Length: 335
Image 1: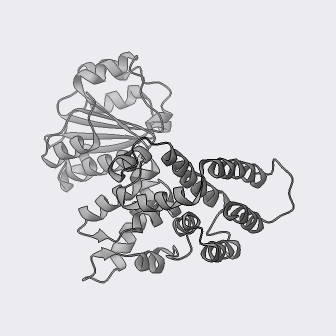
Image 2: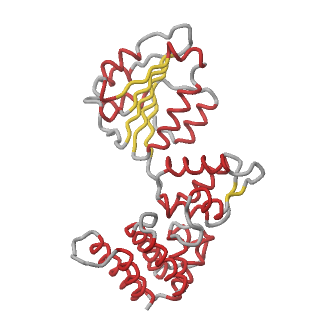
Image 3: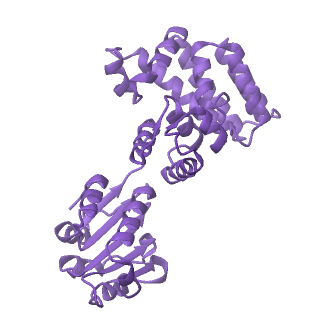
């Protein structure tokens, strides 16, 4: 059967284990968390040396994994077999018979990262009857700030408005990287500080609270020429920390949503926010931008962004540095 990450983790925490977990999909974070939880909790520590085995897809075969899974545990109620990088297995066919009749005393965990299992395969149909299939999907970037908020909440922390957007703009939707940065941050924060602020992000993660893509799009929304130019100058002086292509993408996604806002039949925040896939708190920036940029101007801006994307990738020969390209682009957007 198919289950969500939340359902699987709830069962695991209640010590409800299934015979087979087939963990597939593009987002490794959720696959890793499920696997790590089973590896750390399914067996007592003293039983793991004899009853917990980890193998890798490139070094084994489905037949060998099935043979391991059919073994009986030694002085334990269960045996755990973890298959990492199962996407490297030459074939999955040998799993079909095992999935139809898995060992009750074995917990088989298969990590099938960056791929999914076709529902037309016999292997999937067998798994559907007697195991768990989980497809780990990449989160869209508009969902990342809420994920960050929930992650911090699960650790007993909260965050100020804008922190999630800062991290998303800088780290993208790589959940493992974001979680790693947050974990390091929580270690160094003073014990009595439980609210993550923009100053914390700047001091401990190295993302400027004043000079970042989030602040740039806000300045562009307000047509704040002075602040926009200050940020662009900072980016030009620190190109490694502020890649041109990342800034270009941030501007593109922002103005694409502003253009979409113009054509919404219902522009109330409660209706517009889900339609644009943003949180209601941030709608004021889109409303401001919509007042400052007509649909015609926005279409011109999006056309310019595509042109500068092509320039930055070398398809159109230019002798201009990326910092100067960005200055030129921002000037054209604002004037």
